[in-house]
Image (cartoon, rainbow, N blue to C red):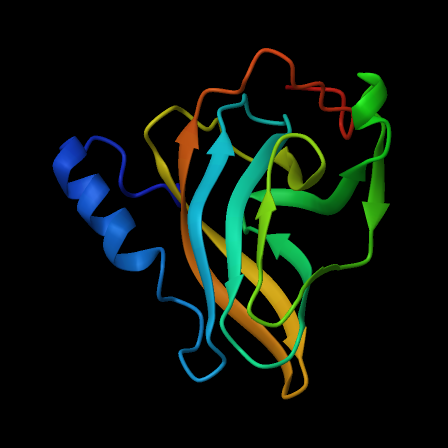
Length: 164
């Protein structure tokens, strides 16, 4: 059974579901909001880059500890340490902090996240469920979010499983 149940729906319905589900799936009492969540298209067995914005409206810092999905064998948070030299070298991170009142953007360069070894092809326009794992002073949390699949920018070099 494929987890991507939204394939083939009219674009307006997919857009509406994405808007309704994306911003507010984090617990409202913690005031952490996840928006602009995307994955890059890939073949089965490949890797996909995740982009998202994490907005911390709370009074203390939060740490994103993982982004995962049932359709991937592995995942990684990373920083691109040689971004300024134009050479991509991803280094895994145990977490990514978001200061109180701050916003952290996960992208294709700099700070980001990836899924490795996806178990099915991801095609542009599909909607995929993800879990964002994070901690704050109150403990550990998991927010369920929806990611829209987009085409990968030409400059992305994956390097986790070797497939893109």
